[in-house]
Length: 56
Image (cartoon, rainbow, N blue to C red):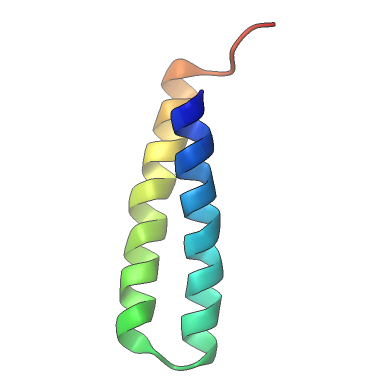
């Protein structure tokens, strides 16, 4: 579950970076932040789907 939390936080920060770099017209930063959202978002979703939520 810790992996989901960490990669989820990285994904959220990368989403913020997408908007920030798009606003300042920084296209290289936009490319890397979109790539980060795609990679870490994929890792987050797949970890959540295959490992699931822990049972209480």
